[in-house]
Each structure stands twice: as C-alpha cells, then as structure tokens.
Length: 173
Image (cartoon, one colour):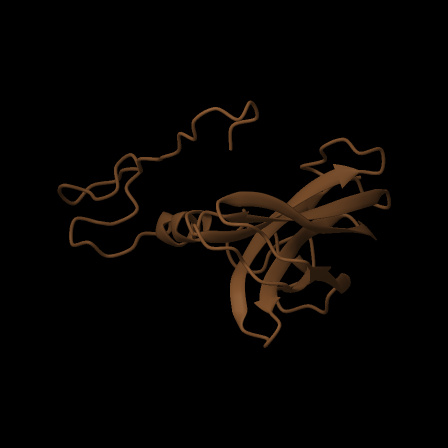
C-alpha cells in the first residue's frame, strides 16, 4: 500500500517454482510437480487473507527474538489482498512450547510438540476493507527460554475460519 497515495503497484514472482529435472534447488515443486518442504510455507505466505503477528519488546521496538521473562507484545495483523472487505469476527491466538525445530526428532531444549499453551486469548476483530493491512489487536506475554509456536486463527461471526498462520520463535535469556 503506497504511503503517499500514489498508484498501487504489487506483485511477486516465485523464483524457481518448479525444478526442470531431478536436482537440489530452491524450487517448491519437484520435477514431477510434487510439493517440496518449502511449498507449504509459500502457500501460507501467499494466501489472499493472511493473519500475522508482529513481536515487540515492552518499549514498542521490534523483537524478532524475545527475551525470557520480559514483556513481549503481540500485535496481530490481517493482510487482505482481496477486493472485498472482511466482516467482523474473532482472532484466537496461543503460544506453546515446541521442540527445537533445528534438530531432528525431539532432541530439542524445550517441551515436545503438543505441549499445553503457555498463553492464549481472543481478540475481537472489527473487520477490514478490501486490499488493506489492518491491526487486529494486541496482547502481552512473558515466555520462558526455549522455542515457542505462535498460532493465530481468524474466524468470522459464525465461527468459520477465514485465515490461520503460525510462527516458530526462539526465546533467549
């Protein structure tokens, strides 16, 4: 969205979408057009309705790697690439410990996947106009050291899922 009100120019091209032959590349589909591991991440990121979370420290500064025990502000956004507006609803969020995603198996330094939520909540959503970026709401958490998964789910008034996303983050000392 142009800050100066000028013409809207948007677009993206996925470099190496499909491998031309069997090889190890950045492509998201193999040479037989089967999804590779990056396909799901690209599919979520390119959804026409994308709910996302911005992590900030207690002073309002970006905090992509939060510190343990300190306040971390969660600012939820809805990016609407559709021409139509999105009606009011509810954002449900949770944060739970997960195993270190960089290590194979469950040899991580934190709790195994499926652990109970460290924090969770709901935020009312007033709706969003078409082709917009809207702040859904904010919440604050304090997390222990380890890896955590932030999960977000935006639902309409009838409870139907409109958008969902997740973010894995390492909380440091």
